Image (cartoon, rainbow, N blue to C red; front, side, top):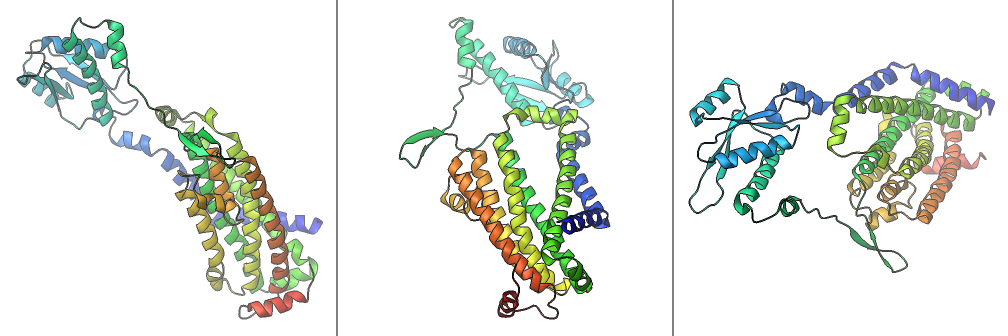
Length: 432
């Protein structure tokens, strides 16, 4: 156990000090920071122009051509002013004609003007917005909502009370729910997915599990292959048991992966807490208190178990390869398994109740990501989670034992890659 701890510590320190680890961590941290701040950069490049209608930019100034429709213009200006701070602002034109308002817009005093054209047979005029730059759809929608309220005032005049007008203007929202049938045959209403913040958490954890498994798994395989090809393994094998070597490297590189995840987590948290990013989160109605803690707790458990399952397989494959040039082809089957697990979860994230995802939740190679989607959506019963964990744990023991047998014989087999028959013959000579 002491020797395994020594190998774990040596592997961790050795990998953390390498240039590849430092450069990869810095580059990925920068890419994460840039990705999280893209909306803010777009705002800066737009010069905070009102036409974009972004949060924190100057409001769009729109002149009102009141000639011919003074009542509509006056009501519209009053309604807009009563709404408080908005992304746009109406400016009364007074006695100015259309030519004067156009000149104001071209000189930069305003961003455009709103004109009302009366069509024969219509009780309410047709509004037309003339602008120097393209106005964002959000601002157009706000102006249309204001016009809708003014239209009600103009058309019905004093027929309705203020309370009735307010009731008519209140939008009706439809909340969607699906009917699912549980295994007892009863029908129950449940959400057809997960909240936006939980969707993001599940999505990020799936990506994290896949990328971390691939990066650390290839580290393990390449570390073992490099030692074997340089003949250092012949010296190590005489002082430390193969089992201690294999699990020492697996745990050491697992700690490297955890360190990298911690760094990325700190980078994400630091960027999300920036003032301009907090505004973006509030616009999308994302509340961190809505995060399902069970998703994070189970996600960490399945991440650790999934890592060790793939890690022992990478270690076994690495011990069978004598040259690093052959490593990519040798680990291809494991890479394909990990890709299958990743794509099943990603493509099923919005349909967590499909049969494929249910079956994948009990297959050890795909369960870490598949069951996570179902936990996030709240459709995975507790017994399914326990059974999935049990199958995964038993699989780690079986594949760990098998990998130890392969590692014990493979690290001292040089030349061409051994066939399954040769490997099986050699494995029978050693007991783990």
